[in-house]
Length: 337
Image 1 (cartoon, rainbow, N blue to C red):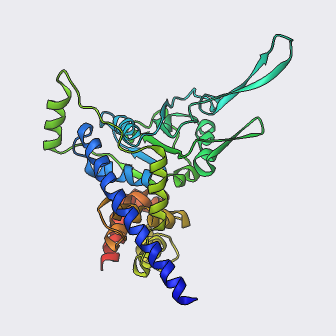
Image 2: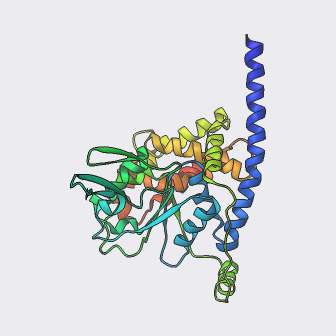
């Protein structure tokens, strides 16, 4: 019996390796296509893609004009997903996103309700400036992001598969904005910080985007293939050392777990969902880099985007000018030993 089980495991392992090698080529082509349109910003492209490959949602935070919207549109094209965009504003209502029921009347005079689906019924939803909408409208996304269905007039409506939300947020202008509640932030697999491009990339942007013709990206895979890659990522083996590193890092970011700096500076830390996110994203990062198993480096490289939106500092730490990023950087340094 054990011999048969060993043989089955070997076949499974071979199948995973073969599937991973096939996915590697496709991921390389996806990166190349995105690179035709988005210059520089390798980290931003990588982290946003990792969130989608892991089957999750991402929150892109950056000042206006850094191609956040363009990146999301490009990913929709390259990954072969149908996409829609909602510009969040203070007067946006939940029904503007979810859809609504309207009353129809047929020729015989019979009346009935008909559901008109909203823009959420798509595979890639771009939620632009998500913190501009009221809490009531923001919460309309909560159920969709976690359960992949919505409820309208008591009836369940399933969303298309796969379903991803890529939201953008402007960190500067806080007037007229409603900060996302902790429960909603936790639904985002990663917070991707979008910084200014370096000199070489900015020069390329100037030259490439002010001429007559602009580069366009083309589809590389389709939705069904994306789901296969997402399933493959969940099957990739993770070594005990990497699992221990994930647990140790997430727990060290919580007060009351024996880390003196965390106890002093952190009001509340990441929950188990942060560990799940690190596990998935570390696997995806390994595949993205052409490897078949994640390493400690993958975990530490993803610590900031996975943890920073799942923690809050104490008032005293904020008064001292400390940021969540500083705390995460110290935890990563400790983990490196």
